[in-house]
Image 1: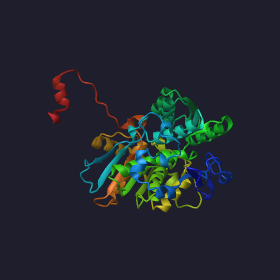
Image 2: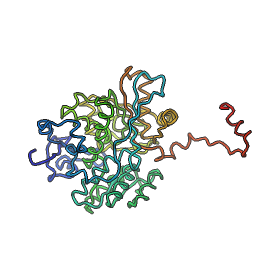
Image 3: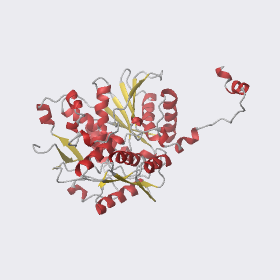
Image 4: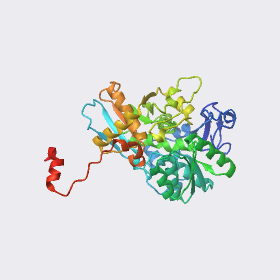
Length: 413
């Protein structure tokens, strides 16, 4: 790799490509892809780890230059002038029956209030360096609002294809950021396929999850932050909400980069958590043939029929002995309320899915005493108020009398 900062490796056939040879998927494996199945040939970005080690790389040196050595960019200045990443990690002791350490990584603190800003910022920066001014994406909401906001900051044009059922809060963000929004009378997968057709026909740059290998490179930065925030140690277990498989692959990729650089000596146990009403990824992990069940979960951000990053996720989970769990939609809503009431962190259903998975582990005594466990909270609850509206009970109005306050709140007086 002497003349290249990075190369691509196909997760299916293992073939390597230079930056000038490919843009999205492996050309060979993409020829055999079937529209109704996850694509084979998703590309993984490989850096010159041997050279970095021989140059005496350390975590502190990587951080000094904002991890540029592990990003597909020429300059950090290409990134948007927004505070993406470096989100807080909270240790909470509010759950008295927990015998383990619980940490909550709050990625709702990103500029557009979701984890997706990590991917959008790197994709946007790369597009800027390569002279692309129009970026297209398919999204159920978060990726679209993220790309729209990042492009607004970068002076780029964003075109977002969304399924017609996408939450109004996310659509509002997309519109307010000035992006072109195109509702599609169909599912997320229909919007995804149409966006790829538009990419080919109009020459737009495509941000789609996994289809663009740099989405994983943006998402992996959360692993670097977790390592530093946990005093340069690796958590025992990390719970991650899963739809397409890109976020969990990003978490794996970040830790794998550190492993390849001898900065860490193990990968944490990473738990893929899906709604049982949209669990096509984990349901197929150990199967020889992929089958699709139509998704219908309230957790819209992870409601996916065809997980586009299935094969990379499968590779990571099998290689590093990851774990998988499905939870019910009711468990997701209960977890969202429990999280809000006990921590002050209001997460959308998709993000609360990871917390629901952790609660299920805790109830089944699957979390060792004294272990360090992280729940990845990927988006703000304000992103999707519709699906939690059934939990809201607004009291009737009272006349402005102090006696009425006493009647309502007698237990507190």
